[in-house]
Image (cartoon, rainbow, N blue to C red; front, side, top):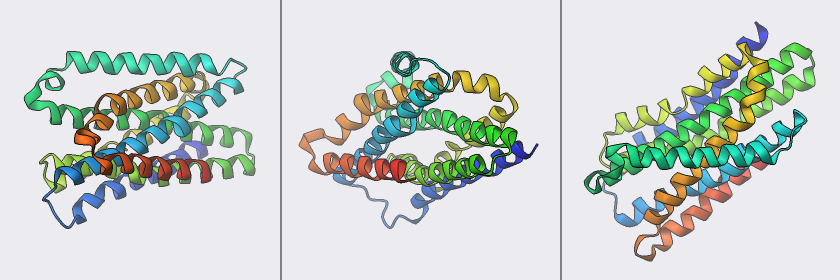
Length: 255
């Protein structure tokens, strides 16, 4: 029960940080977004997602697999490929992604979906950390679980903004954009608590979930965000990709 309560509190914190990031859209000074500003924000979102795919998803997938005594590259490569194929099929099957007149709406929907999907294994990772700490009763493991939750929460701040701001740019109301951005993080406490309840099984499949989410995120980045951010040779979009990448990489490594 201690592990369950701790995981619920920790993943509740990560969700709150996502909501705080999304809340930035409520305080933006202007609603008049030029193409240059829009591309800059898309580039920033792309940079955040690239770094998160590597340091929050692929590297942990390899490490978790090796802890189980398995070859780390197998779930990393296999799950990544599955994530890419899944998004490719989704891109083809959902009509709103295929219509040119709805292209921006489809692009934003894929961005929201990819970040929400990547929050699932992050919630699982936090839940698993607290489940292991509760079973071992080791203060050091509990401290490591808390540090993991704090780190992921801080990372979630720019991710919440990366969803809400593009939604606002594409014409959605401020409040609705905020709610959509915040809602992308609600999967973390849900899956964090579920992971504590089924900790053994969750540990086995976690590497696959992590790499699957990485593949899905990078597909969206490569297929949608970077091309859009770089339209007409936009330097602002390219520079903001680098800024987003550096910021997220720093948060991942430092925390």
